[in-house]
Image 1 (cartoon, one colour):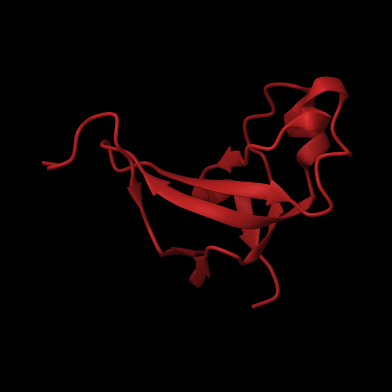
Image 2: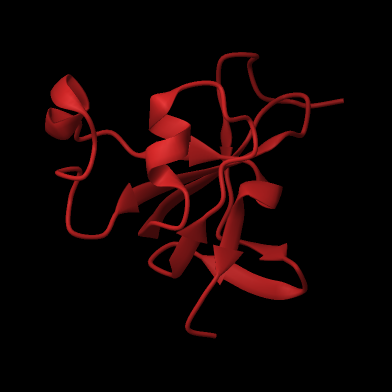
Length: 97
């Protein structure tokens, strides 16, 4: 049972992905698994920097990633996005470790 409010997320310092420790500032390759829209397709194989690692009340981990080189590779209005894109553990691949 969690002691923090439902709306609050726990920020983690690091997480192990495929046996490799990943922390804020590390480079990762994106492997979106959902393939729900054009953005998922455009992000396949792109690299980014981990900006946040969050765990929700249900203990689900989300990794917030900022694209390397900015969001200019994205379609239309998403090019102006300053928020990180969020991925699950199986959707990112550690690189440069």
